[in-house]
Structures are given as structure tokens and as C-alpha cells.
Image 1 (tube, rainbow, N blue to C red):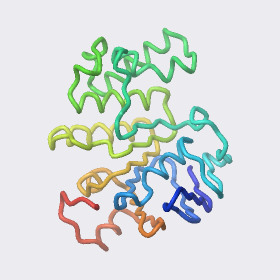
Image 2 (image 1 turned 135 degrees about the vertical axis):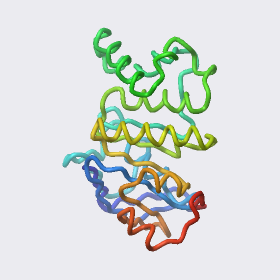
Image 3 (image 1 turned 180 degrees about the horizontal axis):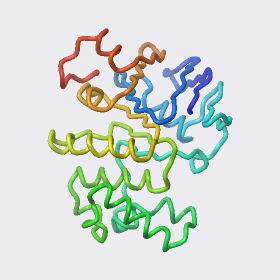
Image 4 (image 1 turned 120 degrees about the horizontal axis):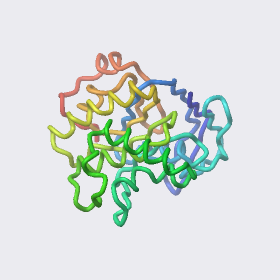
Length: 230
């Protein structure tokens, strides 16, 4: 479980004040809000890339406020993916295990398992620059889940992808969540992604956060199927 307890962040004119919310295990959350509302800021706080001014962050009941990113049991897919262009897809996917000094035999077996699950086994010896957008996204997700994290953070993962590719990735993420029993926090503007994936919806408005069950969210808001919250 993840718990934000009275988290406050101030940077220039931007601020979030006394953010408190609990994320349950094995649940798919979508996080919505207008541009500049603080969605990415919360993700960066959770994975340890941004400090906060006050409050506490608990992961699995432990105060993780001062934990380094690698100590938080979190897989992170940032907006721009940040693949290593001079490394093969195999090395990209296995990177988190290599820096954790996992034995090469174990690492290679895990790369094989993850690449098969993501449908990219045939790409392992290629370089990222030769891949499509959807293929790059699968590689970034593979790198994030290779060490079997408890939490998977996805920051606007489907930007610039076509409809068919998105539908394929929806199925893939549902499968990953089911097989790994991972808590997913998925930042998005797109209601189609919420309809297809969310079990619960977090909304940031006016520097406050609200949580709703998926059905409750759609009952209280009138969205077109592909509308974006911007």
C-alpha cells in the first residue's frame, strides 16, 4: 500500500498542500488533472525524484520519505521513456537487474520471460532507434517491471500512439496487472484510457486530490469517449 500523508510541495508559484491519499495493493489507478495541476509532481514524489516540503510518504507501511529511488520497489515509465539508445533492447530491459547485480543467468532468464510476455522477443538484439513508438513503449514497460516491483508508475504512456497500438497496450497492461498483482498509477489526460483500464480514479483539481471508484467517476461526469481533460 502507498500512503501520502499531508504532503505539501511548493516550487515558485506552484504548490500542492496537505495531499493525503491511500493507494491499495493490486489496484489500477488513473490520475487525471489539467496541465500544470501537479500530476507528474506527485509521481516524482512517489518514485523519489522530487523532494517535498512537509508530510510523509509510506510504502507498505514503512516511512519511505527519505528512501532513494532504487529503494522504493517502484517501476517507473516516464513520459519520454528515456531508453538507452546505444544499448540493445535486451540490455535496456535487463538494466534494472544489472545495476542490482543480479546473476547473468537469472537476468537472461528474466529478460526472456518479460520479452515473451510483452511480445518483443524478436526485438532483443535491435537498438531503440529502429523501433516503432509502440515497440519502444513495450521496452520501457519491460525495463520497469523486470525486477517485479510492487508499484508501477506510468506517466502519460500512450502519447502520440495510434488507436490500434493503444488497444494492444491496454490488453498488455491488463495482463501485466493480473499476472504480477502490481499496483498501477497511470497518469493520463485521456478518458478512453480511464474507461479501459481504471479501477479507481484520482483527480487533482485546485491543488486538492479526490478518489472515486471508476463507476462513480463516470456517473458524476459527462465525457465523450475520446475526450481529454485539459
